Length: 599
Image 1 (cartoon, rainbow, N blue to C red):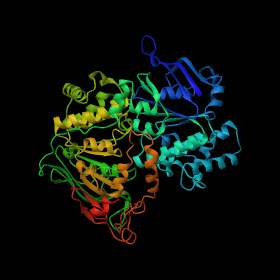
Image 2: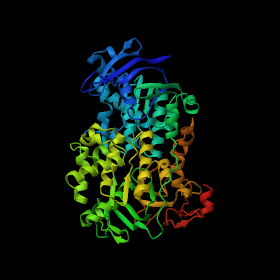
Image 3: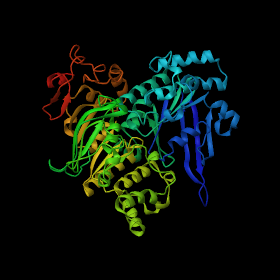
């Protein structure tokens, strides 16, 4: 039995001249009651537009131009504003992609979670708060009785996503829409959140719509899959059938893109061709104390080497210090101690103390191109500024170089007068890359640059990085919580936990056991295209939940409270030694190679 039926849905947007453009074209499918239906496809396929239309909502500039969306006897597309307001948040609820952006930072969490009950007047404040606490407990949130008094900034990204789910479920909706709710989460947090979402939907008997570009995640969450491309349905089927025997060639392309392939990069330089060398790098936030350390130490005693034409991957959960390390290398956040060398010469910690040549040689690509690019500037102005600053180009020479840069990142020269708001997510990230290339750097720090992109666009960006590396001899430090991506492009990998290096080795070494217990947890948490995988792995991940510890002055292993193989009286009293394993990697652990192999 279907809870909702979508028939011949059409959504249009106006053009500068001529008829409206159709962005959702004759889409029809049904939502089986009590099941989760996934909408999958690359950026621009119409996933979110269709999901929002189920609430009778169209994005600014879009128009629900035709078709029907029936929920029982109600055609949602025929309802007026008052009827839609009564429907939204009550019978149909929505969980956004970024809960951090959706919550009001100035209001306490409890006030926001119970707000739907207050708006729709379905229960008293006391009843709503009691229901909210029960939801907090069901979602495995810490301190469910008291967390409502806190503000959004006092929660992690994964906790905020679960709180958004609690707000959506406060009125027992018949349909809940989950719009890419785990895209920006690391692999272990993602499993916790997905498991909580799925269990909650099952417990309440709710029907779900899950919007995603991640097929491995969809395989864990969905009963039915609708594949979309260019606003048209490509395939509809049960999850197991679509994953194992897809009928559409486009679905097969998505499945192929979801399994990152190893990319051949330029052969790294000889041992003497070291681009970046770091020893004992420590830093964080807040004033420096008498001991020479910042009030909040985030990265501690890091050492690494990046050679010409080589790639280093830095992986770890959210909050482990990956982005802080990149900011310290770039000079945006001065390190409190340690040695930085670029091409064998000292690199001063503070950005203001570096020469223009050093600024040029180390460029950084930020995770969110939306916030990294000036929304008021055109593409030509964005690329022209570093050309003038670093190379003194003006006039025709600058325009020609802008055109060359656009061609290098496979963007049309016709985009030169566009602004970032007129570009897709993938195009913005290509522009972000072109701006870095304008400096003609030797090293590019890539900070989670594919995390917000769909699998097809992300694969294209990685291919572009590999191609540019071959042509220009670039070196990359690739920061990510996506281990599949890191393994596909990086020569060496460093694993960070609580600001400390726990493992360092080649890509080949990362493929082979034994590993540090934390590395093993990360590797086992990568979603697989296997039905039931999450239920199997989720138990192990849950067993290793815990509070992020700092090694502190004693230098103790910060993973010790989560480690399933910790040795009492040893791991909590002595710093772990650095061990070199036979496969060539280095791990910080008290267990020897035999002990690690048995974990």
